[in-house]
Length: 244
Image (cartoon, rainbow, N blue to C red; front, side):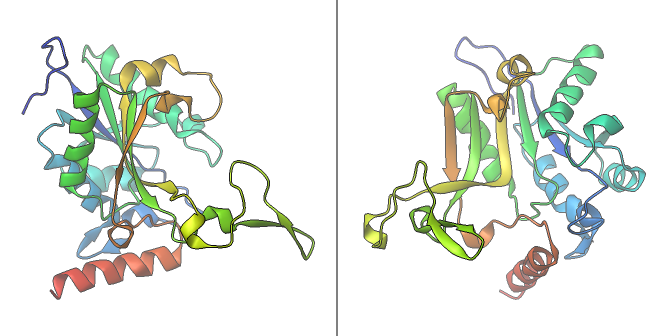
């Protein structure tokens, strides 16, 4: 289903699933079995079912991840090794995909970056984030979840001594006095192509732009798998859902 900008131009929206093969916290995490399919397969299927996406691409340097992704019916773009290290910022891989597609003559207006290790990502959430981007004309949309413990309760350590964590959060004792805060859950990130490409070389997460919007997710249904404990919770999530 084509979407249009505020002047009636049809938008080309590309879903990009970056998937490195070199995870150290949980080796091979992106293709670990989870509810009868490899982890990345859940994200690919959710993206393929999103009618607003014109194309779904997996960016990887890993041959096994590439083979699994192709078996799920999506295109694979080989990621340069320089963009696949532990220290390489993710925006390098995203720009590489955009440039590859544009060099082939494709048009890209919006990039929907989906985490391969967020297997609970739903098609509905992907669509909601895209619709918000198109409706508001903002620079980016991210999915977030509330902090379970108020960050205003945070401390830092010097040796074994607790010290105030100075910065943007003022310490408070009562939960009622703490401003509700949110953090990115890694599931869905919708980026305006122009902001992504023009932010190249800028520090931090400049690729999100200045006008950032968010969709709040239910923390119990948002799982980002980085270690064994996350993986076991993801298994529990899918098993409990099939038992309902």
